[in-house]
Image (cartoon, rainbow, N blue to C red; front, side, top):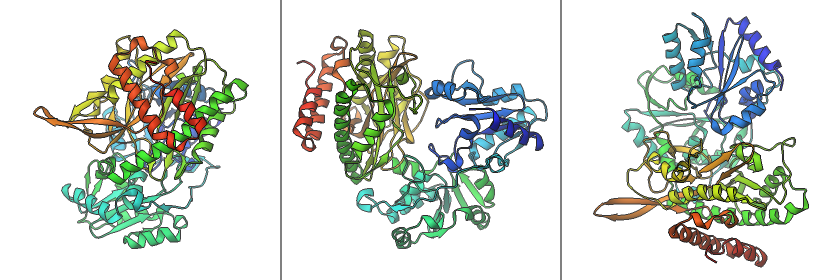
Length: 591
């Protein structure tokens, strides 16, 4: 990486009398993963993580990101002219604090309001007013600088079969309209791609690892509109849209459409996902509130739940074949981290309904495992040897469900410290999985269960413990979560969450263990109505890394029961040789 792109931006800033700019790593839909067309921050800085915001002034340039990406950012920012700033670390300045300290009176702060939510622009506008800065939310840097910019993706959209979705478009829109009217509105504008995909039972391949099509949507009791490029629409999709009376308008017509809304309209907008540019185009009445769709799609119906179970069975079979191959191939000395990712895709591709990975595999050998969101490249990919820890975080997109699993395994000669650390992480993982909790419990109230074994030894991890998972949609979805941050959304039956504590020792190894859990009904008695978790993920833990001396009898039985479940569910689809391999991996710990 060189500073050429940074210098070009500074020349543009000087020409436009701009003193500082903020560049996000997202798109007009505020997606976690974005298409290449909107990766201007990556082009500018060289940083490729999913979370990171760049700030540039005439003299300085910085990139702010969270603990998942600290090591990755240090490597990718080398030679770019950008300094790493660590978010949520005591003593580290936030973007606003840094700007307040580095800008002079009447300085001009600019950004592209198409890429910032209404909430974010309002925050920066207030910040500028409080500090005596000028503010310009209409600075299209990418349009002016990025000459070899990739085109907007034009892959074909496709219909998500109602037999897999478990609900028709009419049924979903009816439920949504009720929520819209509860907010005193008659319509809603939707920018989030996963919400549009869920609502209209449409999918696409415009974004890596997330089956969505680039689009906007508008819904009212009388009108349904999809803003999408015409060439994305197949005859099947057109017939589907016609069936459900969904009008099609071009993607670029959206601002014109919003500008012409009747003045007596009252439109619901989610200020976290609708961009400032779209919000400003609306001249009618607006109500800002969290999108009702997020909560509706988080609670899976019975068809989706059964799909999740079947998808995890197929995924577990593919992982058995992957790990068995890995054990046989590593001693040959010619397997790299990238080879493992490629072989995982090969094995999953043999399974019914597979439509790609749900995120890019994290395959970290030894010290690479300590980089929480490590992404191997041809230059960085380590060659595996029969020694040390190997962390594999991987997931698949299936038409009937989405998977996400992490396993840390030993490739040989585990040390006592490795076994100790692995067992600490496993104890936290097990504690969360066996939790029973009263209705109304939020994820933040359960988070300490997964962290406590580590905390007791003065250890911890910087990422969340659990995230929601979409149904053949985003691998990370809200509104619920399990983390230390206060999130008031209660866990409800039908929600899916990950359970993924970890421990990372820079320069040595990383350990993370992850299953997906389904929230289900627990017992109900005079003390209340309780909920619990059902394991969806089906793959054994590495017993070679478990220190039995650290486990209670209940924890031993919990592992053994889980391994019995894994074998029962996966073995019917395996060959005799594969069954023998799985039998060994699921052998009771007491034997």
